Image (cartoon, rainbow, N blue to C red; front, side, top):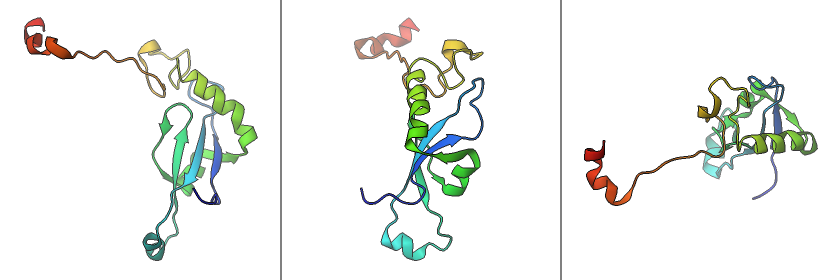
Length: 129
């Protein structure tokens, strides 16, 4: 909650995505700083929580690090790209439909298929293996 901070908002990658003619999008929100942290901050280096449309929360970054890769854009400018990236991430990795690893690549996908072996079969698994 609270008021937005300077720097909160949408960002577009400066370079095109690998193997695609599209940009990547993220939203960054400044992590709240406690009164104790504020008192001891000398560099005034606020940390931003970064979220991607494909995979959700990403590694938190300082604004300087964020601006090395992304440029700020308005919500309206980011909307179409954000929605496209979100939709594509359901079926394709971040490298796009022409990825050289094909369906095996899961980098940046928001849904993965897992096969779990569980239950009473586990007690005899060493025999089956």
